[in-house]
Image (cartoon, rainbow, N blue to C red):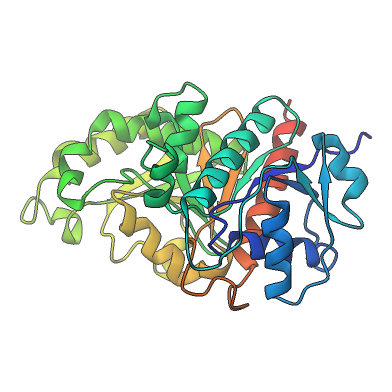
Amino acid sequence: MSTPLPLAVSLGDPAGIGPELIAESWAQREERAVPAFFVVGGAQVLAAAVLTRALRVPVERIDRPEQALEVWDHALPVLGADDADYTPGKPEESGARLALYSLVEATSRAAMGEARGLVTAPIAKSHLAQAGFTQPGQTEFLADAFGRPREDAVMMLAGPNLRAVPLTVHCALSEVPELITKDLILHRARIVHEALRQDFGIEKPRIAVCGLNPHAGEDGRFGDEEQFVIGPAVAELEKEGLDITGPHPGDALFTPRARKAYDAAIAMYHDQALIPLKALDFDEGVNVTLGLPIVRTSPDHGTAFDIAGKGKADPGAMIAALKLASEMADRRAANG
């Protein structure tokens, strides 16, 4: 059997916790069974981040992704010479430029088949905008990078206890009711169904759909989106053969008993999905982008500038993102 390709990892904002968690993931590679990866850019940043956590992590530059496997056992492989100063907790424009370069290049390497998947460290979107980043987030960036409609790139938050998909993502809460359409629910539910089969190995996926309003509208007393949009979409998907239920009241769908009845929940807006995921699985939560030709994951937390460089950040979500990306890539390879 051939040796699997490494994963490509983008550096994230150099002033955030991404670099130290990447280094910590390599340091725990044996005890946590972390799959091989290379980081794009930031060798100097990573070497400095290592010192803040008192780690023994040699950093070695490589010229080609396949060299990562030669280096992996004795050093953290870093592709390329692009770098920036490391000032934890103090984001700068030079760091934002490095973060954007790393994201673009890591995506490109995965797209060219030089990496088996992409794992992205956290970025600060407002700072990245200074370097020319125009998308609302990395999910939308990836959709644009692969020439896909943005509704094709579906965000899933996955942890040991829950998989949740927000139907609408980076928008104001006041915009959500207008954005929820039957077509959007149909489109994204089909993508979730196929991804659960292809990437998570669930032969007959079970999907539960949240309502938008309190008590799922209670027969129109608190809103009619459930009656005229969400419910009809669920009914049509049932006719197609999907094992899907809803709309369910959002305050009841994430209880321990309810979670046993589905493999993924589709929520109507960002916080409806992310609050339960972070409450249940904060240190192991992974952001997965479904519907792309490549595997992409990311730790489900931000840059945490306030604790960067202080050795407080937990590497659990980064390690979980690396391991899930590897598992998904294995399933895709096995299925041809």
